[in-house]
Image (tube, rainbow, N blue to C red; front, side, top):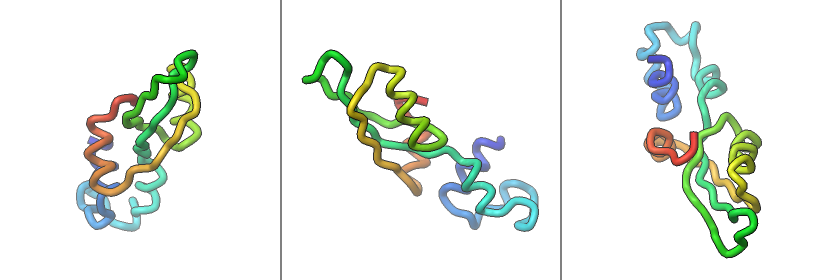
Length: 97
């Protein structure tokens, strides 16, 4: 339930009624800090310079996203943060969590 509440806050901070608390107890800034980020990535597969992989990844921040991709033997990583409703939808269908 908490995961869906945080996703709702990422779309619009006006949906505070989902938490069952008032604005003073749980404000939009708190939700923004606790939510995860969605990134679109493109990277080169190590030892295969001609092979480029791309997709979406869910991580807390850009540094963690890069670390996750490095563990999958991907180098020359390019990340672009996806926000708004598009980010919400892509977080549900992400390639890497």
